[in-house]
Length: 182
Image 1: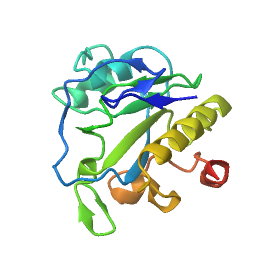
Image 2: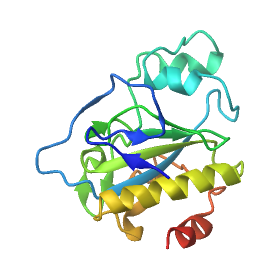
Image 3: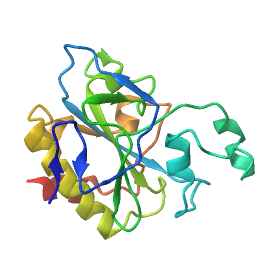
Image 4: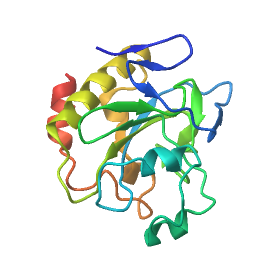
């Protein structure tokens, strides 16, 4: 069971505060949940590289593929690793920098009104049962706290940044996930 405290932190997720956030616009109602995937290096799981990226501690010389990440300041509210263990980087009350250039139902800047959840993974490798179970439980908690997040307002990064992003990818089982939310 998950709980959101008065400061917007999910219990019992581990806290790893990121400097990569800012305040939401005063009139922004949290009304969108965006599902992402991430792995560093691409297709490799485990280790601290994703945490390091979100907290500006990534050694960009540690792997040749990290060169493009130098100077990048990104974050997500939550990350669910392959074992289903959640970590939180930004308070749900704040604006994490996960969506980038984005639009949903004609509204730009999805970071203003969304919560971002990263799954440790990549587009073409199946996500784990543990990840789905944690994602389902957290999504149910978020929907109770933010009733404007309806099933139709739970989307992939690819839905809000088409042509630019592909995650969570073909390996994500939307039917299983959405059916489990009911």
